[in-house]
Amino acid sequence: MAQFAYASCCRLFCASGISVQIGAGAYRNRQIGAVFLTAQINKTAQTQPDILRYNIPPTAKPISTRTTDALLIIDRYLTQEILRPFMLGFGLLVVLFVAYTAAIQLTQAADGVIEPTTAMRLILLNTLIALETLLPSALYLSIVAAIGRLHQDSEMTAMQAAGISELRIMAAVAKLALVFAVLVAVLSIFGRPWAYGESYRLESQLVDDFDITTLTADRFIKLQDSGYVLYARVVDREQKRLHDVFMQADRGPKSEIILAEEAYLPETSTEEDRKVKFLRGHLYLLNREGPGDGSMAFKELITHIPEAEKLSSYKRKAEPTASLAASDQPKDIAEFQWRVSTPLATILLALLAVPLSRSQPRQSRFGIFFSAIVVYALLLGLIGALRNAIEQGTLSAVPGLWSAYLFPLVLLALLLILPKLKK
Image (cartoon, rainbow, N blue to C red; front, side):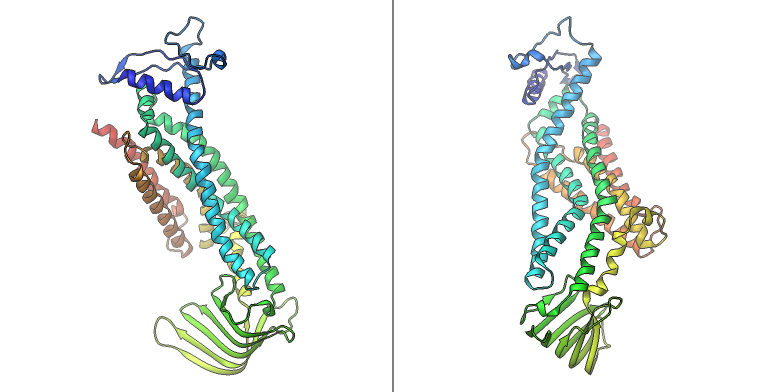
């Protein structure tokens, strides 16, 4: 076992491109042959990279210095192993998210609801907002992949035989996670409100520039994810009117349906909200939860355009974090706690990924990935549920969203303690 661990250690450090010096040590726990690691960078390794010295020369560094060098090598090696799958996974997540967002925004642009340049800007802003979630997710899965591979290839066994415990591995992972946590904090605390503020400004501009004559005729169009669906059989661009118009809007438990012969945008002042005037038609109110339907005929009906009603939902997300911290409104508290807790989630997920990656050599990694994804989904679901409870006022600010992170903390403690109790 000692020879196997020794060979694995040699392969591990040589794979990282660094020449090391290794001396055999005593046995530990009667069964596991420990290899005492005294690794140091050798300047002559450029000409003789394959040399491994089994005896420590008299001029070698002190043991404490050699041990520190060895741990630094471990940290660099683990960082490299984690960053490789991270770059691939993070790039894939970004591409998928951009593709999903582009499918929505470019459809709106094709229907004439927004300009193509505005659609591209909204895609970039939505991607920036999503980074606070994509970065921790990609890091979490990349750690599971990297540490899982080390277990499969027996490199983790070699490290443990050399006296490098799982807690030391977690310390190396924590250093990397701390860098990501700082980046996520910047994105969440500063980038998120800025991106939502820009989205709010673009939405305001869409309201000012909204022109129904740019819409595509004879096609059902959903206006900017607002819950409104508009259809016009004929678009008269010269008269700036729609003919044979259908519009559906969801208003709480009721659906509002308007059928009209014509519709157009009346002139309004800069202080007034933009409106749509419908001529000669019927209004139907349908209750989706029970009785209470109604209808009426009209000669003229004026309603606000959907974007004007939607703008207020962006204001809270565009508020500076300092303003939210001073607010006592439940929804502001939920938004504030979400922003400041994302760095904590990044670190906890990274640490939790290490014990979740345990596996036997040559064991399929499907099981550890499945377990990791289940834990991740449970944490996201718990955060979402508690966030909704705070917004509705059913959960106080203390413990608030912080109580969601008791789950990964308890799970992490169990994963670290239970193996020791079994020995």
